[in-house]
Image (cartoon, rainbow, N blue to C red; front, side):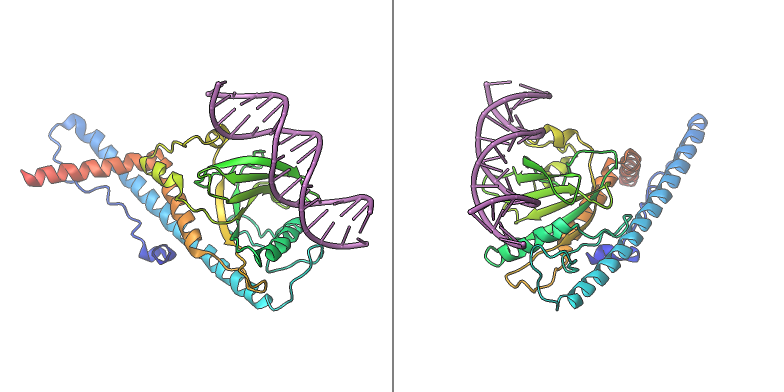
Length: 293
DNA sequence: CGTGTTTGACCTGCGC
DNA sequence: GCGCAGGTCAAACACG
């Protein structure tokens, strides 16, 4: 986490000019083209560096807001647990959406659900976390791609939210009993709220696939493959342990993991970035060949 | 034809 | 006990 916590700690500059600037260009006809290419790459390098710096800055802001929110939640935790049907808001259960999306507290039904779950978790230690995904408002699908494969087993329209709630089970492994509920935020239709129950007892399948860049799903649904990716905004882990009064905590490793995956995914999907990277690698190889001679 | 999705029916828990 | 709401099941359907 800390390696991403400050832009000053991240070397955002990609030295794409190595090997290229030292190239000795013999033919005049190609000189102009190469210089243009070099200038273009330098511009891209600068642009990428700025984007990365901006990304790190934004991450720092989000992290700060998250920490402040957790501290606030812990302070408010002294209040006794409410009953399921209580209309009053429980701050410990509401979740803040940060990062490009205005603050969005959970719906009443979500609060009800979480209160119920809290009681259930006094018996069954189940990890419950909530993830917010920013999507296109026009996108009516309830599909979020989080690296795992899910099988939809139900959909229901709930009372306080006109948007239907979709129910998913983890399809990666038969023994994995993780469930996921996805519903649009009642306040911001462009935000998908995914509630995860339980923990996966297997590795994330996309970790293997994404490394190859092919991201082939192993029998994943057609919808998951075809639908556009929802952009994860923030993960807020609402894990409740046996103690009902225990505060909601932020699962920083998960946030970190998600953020890193998202950054890597964004970069690898950018053709400009891959082209610049290829050019940099080529340049370095060329330089190495020159020095070997 | 196999796999995943849809959707109405059914189950369960809670409040009154 | 009844009604309501959320969660789950499973047959029907769609798709490659």
